[in-house]
Length: 107
Image 1 (cartoon, rainbow, N blue to C red):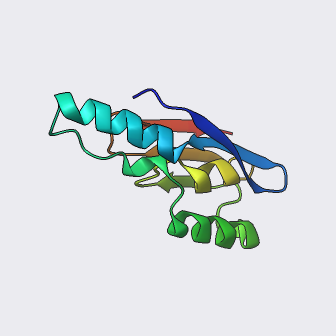
Image 2 (cartoon, rainbow, N blue to C red):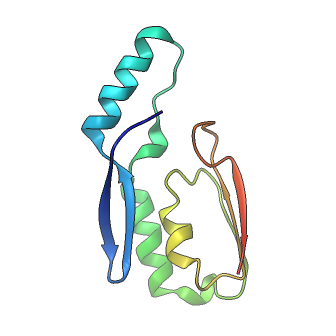
Image 3 (cartoon, helix red, strand yellow):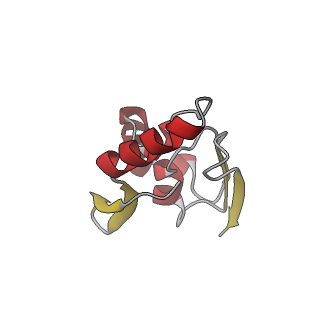
């Protein structure tokens, strides 16, 4: 699914590219015309819950430091990318076939 992205600053020294909502919607609407079963890319935005768990983990890094961490339903993966320098290993999962299916990142 081709779409434009926007570089978004999440925290000091942390920026990620997220899909531009307008570009994503236009692309999705166009693809939906040929595939009515195409599911909406819910992974393509930063959800408030993702921001909340990211803030919590950054304030309580001891929960993930030097540990193996599994993020289920990662979407864009904001919490995982944020803690990647602290965890010993990250496993990021997402159901959507257009996105990360399962990736492991050893530190």
